[in-house]
Length: 173
Ligand code: SF4
Image (cartoon, rainbow, N blue to C red; front, side):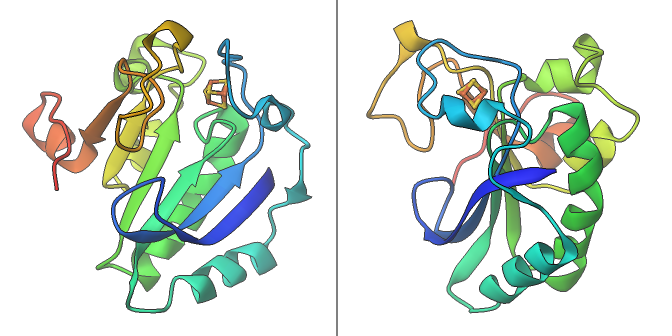
């Protein structure tokens, strides 16, 4: 897996102050995507164990509320396989911090409606994170006033509550 950027004090992509990892590779190709350079799976630098260590270190301060993984699309199959062990490591190292992920695929697609992005490990990833912001960027639904999202079709989902209850529950602070 490759990544384009890591931000160590991000307040735009999730609640609180966060470390954000922008992974590379996306096949959604949404019209109006604000970073089409991240569609290429080899954009940026290779994600290595040193990269993991760097992120772990960035997350250490108490003011860092959690990690956000976005892209590109972290739920492209190649990226899911690379990210699952890393997400598990974050969970072990920082059990009280939260993990948010973004995907152009919807929660329903990830849960089985779309075999391209529903892998044998997809539910393991979803079961290890707190919040999923889902759905493709729809240019005609673009709304700059939305918190953490680009278009109004995208949802901020409380994944753990949704998986426990069996129905989709949106996140709220
Ligand atoms: S899912 Fe995100 S990165 Fe991929 S094309 Fe859509 S807006 Fe761009």
